Length: 312
Image (cartoon, rainbow, N blue to C red; front, side, top):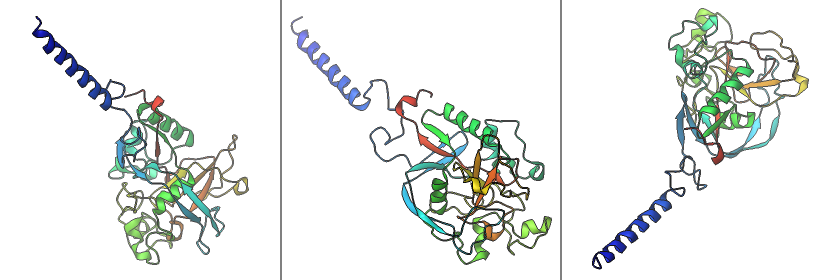
């Protein structure tokens, strides 16, 4: 028995050492930290993630000069004043690589149908979801947040949207002064649309789509984001000044303010926008959101505090 005691003591010391090693790896002793890599220690966040049908990329914080260049056409009652604005700083955030798709929306609302103009379009599930009122968008974002262990979801602010859309580009659009290249970057009024809906504003080239295009059909920007210009206008969080009351919607009808005073801004142009409307500075005001075939949205994600990570 006496000879066995040193062996028992040695075994006990080994078990203690093993327990200490496990605690060092997992401070709570119950498994790995549920937060994304880098989030618990203040390190770099993961560069991307996929959740509930959308792919998100991390955009590092920075600053840019928000502009509405002189001479740029701002039709449809847009609020741009042709002046240069103050520098805008953006903190790091996650943003979806694409506009919210029909497939991603139908995870929340399986009964959704595209507007009649767009029904029967090929690759329907990968088209941007459009024609959604702001109250339902807010419910969708709350639904995503409730089902995520790590992230809370919302619309981007105007500053976040423009910072992400530009991705360091300080021009009007990625094609610069070469409009023939626009169809490589954005879905806009083009030869494909002119064949089914004759007009005199279309560019001569074809982007291959008369109406909405499946997301990620065009070149990404330097942050890896697709369709920030064209395809579908994108809603932002900013409230606009009352002086823009009565601005014109893409359909040509004049809107009126809702009873709660809500004002909605959307950016970037859509599939029915002309070349001069598809730019980083394009900014439309929509008072009382109505059903559209040209207005969608992109989602931003922010990491929840540790106390908010209760769901798997």
